[in-house]
Image 1: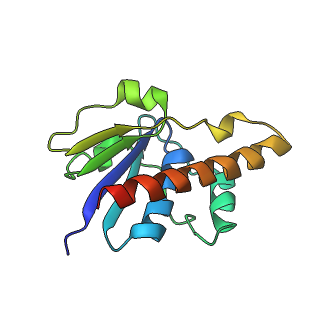
Image 2: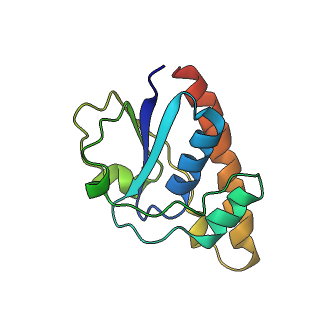
Image 3: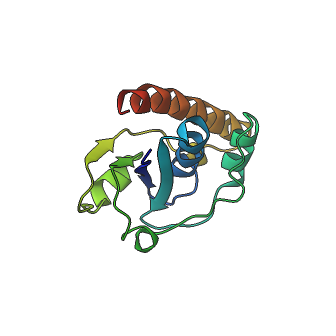
Length: 137
């Protein structure tokens, strides 16, 4: 069976898009090949790694990537997970489906609220992926 290529695109490719990549791989890796990239890539946020580890998904081996690293890949679906990425997202030739779903940036929270925000966004991403990627089968 041919796996469909899915790109999660965000500003820094450090939190939301990284968690989405890990979630899709863990939940539907037999049907989808998950990728992530960002407009201005930085590093994978340690709180994203921690929040995912809490549900048994290891994204510690993932790294932030820019568009140049994924530009040659033909994507069946491109998902922008933040408004800034939506505004600056280039057109991907051949992308079968462009989807936008904005999630709050958990990295914008401080102190104890920060890990709570990462957990909340992780759970929102999971619910959205489960609902939408089952429908895209």
